[in-house]
Amino acid sequence: MNAAPVLHGWLAEFATADQVQAAAGRVRQAGYTRWDVFAPWPIRGLDDAMGLRRSPVGWFVFAGGALGLAAGMAMVWFMNQHDYPLAVGGKPMFSTWFALPIAFELAILFGAMAAVLAMLALNRLPRWHHPLLQTPRFARATDDRFFLVIESADPQFAADRTRQFLESLECVHVEAVWEEGPCDT
Amino acid sequence: MPDTGSFWIRARQVCAAVGIAAGAAAGIGWARDPGEFGFSYLLAFMFFLSLGLGALFLVMLHHLVDAGWSVPIRRVLEHLAMLAPALALLFVPIAIVAPQVYPWLAMADHPDAALESKRWFLNPAFFYARALAYFAIWSVLAWRLRAWSLRQDRSGAAECTRRMRRWSAAGMFLFAITVTLAAIDWMQSLQHHWSSTIYGVLFFAGSVWATLAWIFLAAAILRLIGPLREVVHARQFHDIGVLLLAFTLFYAYIHFSQYFLIWTAHIPEETFWYAQRGAGGWRGIGLWIVFGHFLAPFLLLLRIDAKQSMALMLPLCGWALLMHYLELAYHIMPVLRPDGFRITGLDMACLLAIDGALGAIFALFMSRHPAYPIRDPRLQEALAGAGTPPVSAPETAAEDA
Image (cartoon, rainbow over the protein chains, first blue to last red):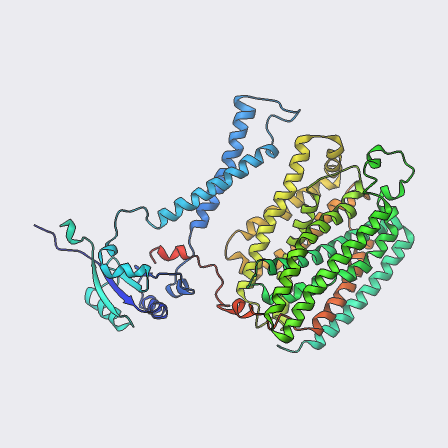
């Protein structure tokens, strides 16, 4: 009646930041691409050890800012020049000078919104659930333990070999993470 | 620390030779036309004054926010700020030719209602007394801040840091007031009918921007030739670059505010200043400032990794100093040369004369004292994780690798 549980990946638990950082370097060298590290606090140099590329959020912020600037200019132009021309103080109906404060504020607003939305989208948030959350030991990732997961989606993933590889690292525990928990069956 | 004693002796000699030769050339220009000399000299003087004041600000800011990263570059800034007494001496030619440069100084008998109402401020006695007060305040602040810093080199006592912090807390207020008034006295009052309440902030913003470009170049050179090799790393360059980007924006914000308010209010006694600078060759200079002083540096500095790319930053910082000079010329020179900007031999002579004099003194400072605060309690903090700049944002860790 129940489908066989699908393996999400292997989760290795580490006692110290140095150990997980060293392990990250080994996993990267081994050529894995679908894996991640979880730690209670930012570890300096971990990004380099993991070989993470720079976050692309900045590009979304730049696009959002440029869009906001254009939107502000267009809005002021539409209102003052096009829809309801209103001469104030002998000024032209439209000028970049008086549109600039509005356009500047909208650039900030759109840029900030783009930053939040792009961050959420790139992190695949919001989501209801993640397979990792059903392993009780994983709760300590917010307290005093460090975790490294290699997902089964990785092209190099092989159930036994990957497990043995993780066990060869300086970890305290390795366990399987399943796609669907017992409650769903 | 590598021995660079002979380098500084050579630098001092070269600077002194350049300063004396250019000073002689400037002296001939003075004899020939005191008015023209006055403007050329004022422009050069304000350029170097702005670097000294920017350095004083950065040193005080360092103490006020209890910064760690900027410890390795602080001594160089302390030396730069300590040029204030020399700048006071270099102000003497301006004090002498002032009546030929500032029209209101020579207008004692003129019936000028607008000037009459400003006479309590714009009168010769108060003008010279203020100048004395500015230099006294800047010199004492720079002197005390460096003296406590040098004392810490010997004792390593935390008490020195607390003393510098106290001097900075009081000094920041004095700095804000004196810089505002100095910008009004020496630049804005060239056209005394004009007034802009934001003018002091505008001068301050441009000054700190140029100083950040200067310290980036200085740190890169001093790392290359030795004195800062062990202490200045990617993190310092990154943080200077971040501040440079911030001040690029801050400067543009302030100058836009000034222009925008004058443009909107449209009062003739304010608009004439920009009308004059929108005519002839100055119109093009204004556009250079919009695009070269703000837009190009802003776009180039945006990327997080741009601040550590020496191939980008070194030319950009040189460009920033050039733009700062152009910006000061935009404020000062239209009075003398209404038809457009040009650089004369006299401009260059004044620039090199002051540069040589200050460079020689700076080289003397560098040869006498350690190149960075060797026993500052926060030095280790500045060096921790020196190779890895703080650009790896924690949020990226949540992404799938």
